[in-house]
Image (cartoon, rainbow, N blue to C red):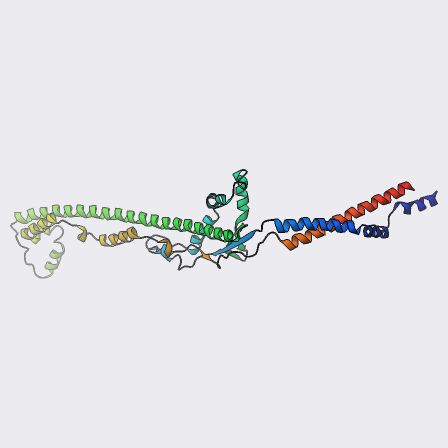
Length: 351
């Protein structure tokens, strides 16, 4: 019985030589499968639309680029100067903003599609657009260098859209910065105007108080019959002169007091006599007229030109063909091996 089992085991197995022989006998089948996959892969590679990719690299502006943003902004003016990082962060925030992406999708992407391409929900079209347009860190070693890439079947359109998207982000960032500068200057000018108004009101009250004081001194001078200031010599002269604006104002004499009161009452403009008023007016005029022109500032720099791509990134024809041939060879071998095993099984059953 043991000998029968030992003799039967080899009959149930197929050795490597038989497998190789079986594959060789079916070499035309394997080749046909490889050719079929190669034809399918080649058709996909050569008939599918090529995809081009345009890229823009952005880096921070220089200190010179943001100089006009900081015009008049000093610690003495209580306005903190903007840093390069702050301005660049404003640009990056607009570049990556969902609102800009959605606006660009509606203004550029949707009008470029034909009727058949617009079939389906807009969310699906927007997801496809979001995959075609990406903003990412260009290099981990340069944390402030970002790339904007756009994929399209038209190389000219890809480059044009990258330029348009970057320009839209620039306009938004510059507008935000200029609005911030103008708003702060406007607030500063309004505060200074309030200080000027307060000084003028204070100056008017001081003039009225001075007139009241001089009238009182005039009554005293007229009561004692003092028309002209007395001539006082020696050390007493200096002491009396020092107090002629206080309790001894009447010593100026009635004529001088009458002239001074008349002058104060007929004074039409008090501004020249208000201390620090002119300095505040100069500051107010500066902030009131302060304006930043978009052409005089920059919120980013392009690291290299935006060029129209001349080679598609997809489909990779050589890779697709190689994968198709390899896959066809593997499947062809499996088919041939399966047929060999099936034939061997039939032969065993027929014994």
